[in-house]
Length: 435
Image 1: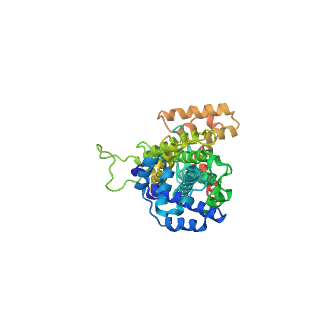
Image 2 (image 1 turned 30 degrees about the horizontal axis):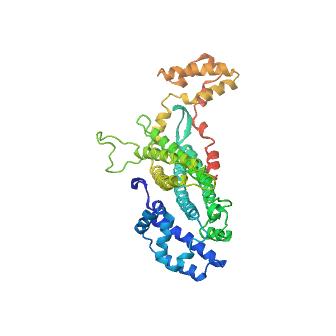
Image 3 (image 1 turned 60 degrees about the horizontal axis):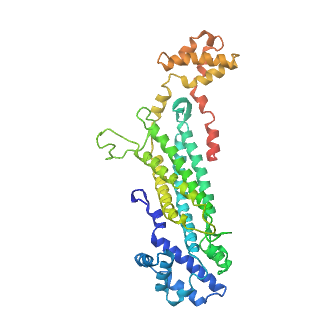
């Protein structure tokens, strides 16, 4: 986690203090469950909560113990015993380290998912607001980077809204899938701990019992979680790349907000660079980079190994912290995006009406011309316009093969910009569910 790309709420989830607090709650709830079924004295369970509930766990002390034990959970339990006293002997009864580690990780991932879902809600709100603001703002649609046919800027943002709405649904599903608890003991057989303990801890921690944990919770759940984060990152990069292209000097249909006192270049004072969306693009690459290690974590030896552990200690914090920061940054970009309808219209008109070529093609075919001949006639008049030799409408009206089929007013009708916008309301209703 790099402070430059971190936000406090998400970072706090992954702090040692938060981790040890969750470990304590898992152990304390398990001790309570054991007391409830008569395995340990109720007084012992009460003492664990009494001493540990408001305790401040000494990270330095735990690290010092681990330096000797070479085992993080044992180091924590040793420190907990220093706080609780003799009753600590009833803590961790029948449990194994993975019961604590895996359950804790899933608590942290669900907490992180909750923040990311809120981030997506904020981004969706910004996209919706700006989409309706520019619902009917005409702009050129591009395929292969080349002018194609007119769209609206609102449609561009509506498409992004729909994509991130799907992202939210996937993340909600991934959160549910990873929200499981394992308190099943060595190799997951419950030989030394009653399954009712797992059920109790799961309920207290807001999780579901893992059906078969084998000692570790199956990592296909985590692979799906990180894969969803990777897809969200890719969607962010798609939108960020769109903004970057629209901000190019030759296009300049939209650009990132440029604040007073902001500098674009150390050498060239005139520069206004798309630094935020470039940054988002880079951060998206990092989040996607965590997906492959998560997939490789699925294949563990037999009932358990710890080859996944070092991976998750890195990608758990880094992927969620990075995505949280990037989502907040993208929301800010969309919320304050500078949009230039006049430049959009200028670019629409740049090719002298060529963006209406399909309408002319269709009108000719409806007038009785074969598609092949209609395409030839339209292209024959379009190519000079590409070379800067006249405008499309004038050339079509001067072509006797075209005017033999279409009257001048019929040709002019093909150049109606509103024709391309007639179904915008329908698309918006599909996306936003509003009339």
